[in-house]
Length: 263
Image 1 (tube, helix red, strand yellow):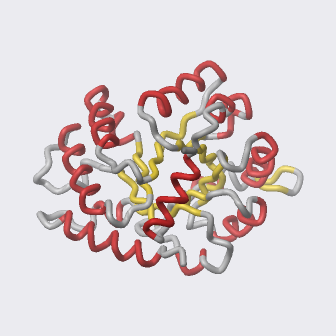
Image 2: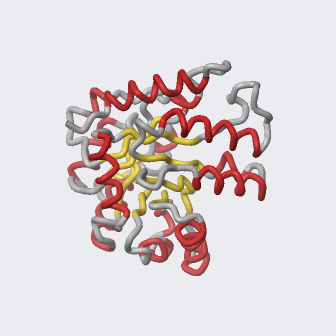
């Protein structure tokens, strides 16, 4: 099954576009968990168990695991293997490099870990992306317009009356098939979201920025929201820092599950 088909089935089965981001910052996890690779693994597994009935996708952020080296990557792998098979998975790794290096990044994500999709930084150009798109059964989300304030530094710069993010979206659609190509488009960038959707009306958007970053879902709905995956991380993971963290994560996930209903 192609990744996009799995994604559609997962969303249709639950009638939601909610993606739960696994960003286990050990500085914020409840004190019952050790500040170690094992600690963030145990915490993440509890979060998945508490939210799996509401998540059509899980996005695992590699940074929080790479911090712990080989033990962190082992924890990441164990967490991935505990995600139900019918839920779409995203490797939030933001990889990119020259061709040969990119080839090994792509193989690590798709052959070793077996993720359904990955986030990729497109700023090194087409040759840094091709290796990922050679996995024609997977999905690749290019950073389009990110949710952070630093998006102003480069992605919103003008070149010949177009923002850089617009050029990224336009060019990449000429290079790659729609079924494999998605874009990261931040919920905090409302005007840019509108432009991005006009440029790519049928591509999946991976939308961060709802919740702790302050993105307004009601404003997003004024434009063509779907097809999309809407990620929430901190607002679910750290809904409580106490022993009831899993119960509170469950309730918060259910709130977003209902909010992000597809129909």
